[in-house]
Amino acid sequence: MTAQIIDGKAFAAGLRARITTEVAAMADRGITPGLAVVLVGEDPASQVYVRSKHRQTVEVGMNSFEHRLPAETDQKTLLDLIAQLNADPAVNGILVQLPLPAHLDEALVINAIAAEKDVDGFHILNVGRLATGQKAMVPCTPLGCLMMLREQLGSLSGKNAVVIGRSNIVGKPMAQLLLRDSATVTVAHSRTADLPAVVRGADIVVAAVGRPNFVQGDWIKPGATVIDVGINRTDDGLVGDVDFAAASQVAGAITPVPGGVGPMTIACLLANTLTATARANGLPDPEGLTP
Ligand code: NDP
Image (cartoon, rainbow, N blue to C red; front, side, top):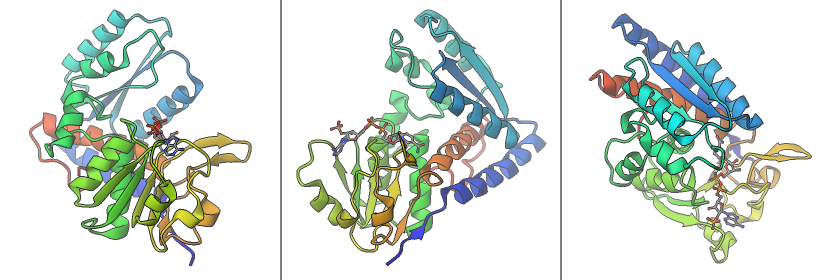
């Protein structure tokens, strides 16, 4: 069996096209969504992400506000900037690029963002709202995975799903979203006993481990849908957490790396910014962009 390749790049392009249309419709009402991105320091990977976010924000017709602060910025200066962005009606979404330099308290900074502008979905209120089934801002990467799974499978109800990884930014919110869609969810991690056996029972596998080619082809249940979140830089280039060559012989559908989950993440950031803008203006949530 050869798996269908889930084309995240094409899916993300479609999503951005839809967002562009919605942004144009908002412009007719005199509303332009605005996304503020705060980058502290000069981490090269973060600089690449911030550039990409800026370009795509402008391309869909939103306003992009970039704030670059030196690595030695103190906490008060950063918190003051966040307070200013919270109060600015032109700013609908605020994203503080992580990781922050070690002297800054990441949790404190994230929780200082107004929850309704927290387009990364990391604020403690949004985490709690997602966990309790309330209207939340949902973390971008798991939201993108959910959209691709729904598109691929239709209903997720009753499916056995295994999420490998329990981070706050991917694994845990992914598990919450799958649960919300009535999948039966197992969250695996580094202490999980007999991981291959756990994965073999899964109709849906989401791998968010951060280890190149970690999930083996013979762990995959024939016909399963495999979402590979991993981004690992190796001598052979960018590879995922799943041994793609082997897994794609067994799975029913699989995301490639690159070109799978990655492109969906920024598209979902724009989707969240649109949702935040709609909510700020008393408009209904744009359809299909929230869980
Ligand atoms: P973290 O390092 O925060 O979490 C990794 C998780 O994997 C942990 O829960 C850890 O378990 C688990 N793990 C580690 N080793 C094993 C093992 N041997 N067996 C089972 N589980 C294991 O990573 P993130 O969640 O932040 O990211 C995961 C991957 O996704 C990375 O490659 C990252 O680059 C990528 N990523 C991609 C994004 C995208 O846009 N496509 C966005 C965000 C991340 P434990 O908790 O027990 O230590």
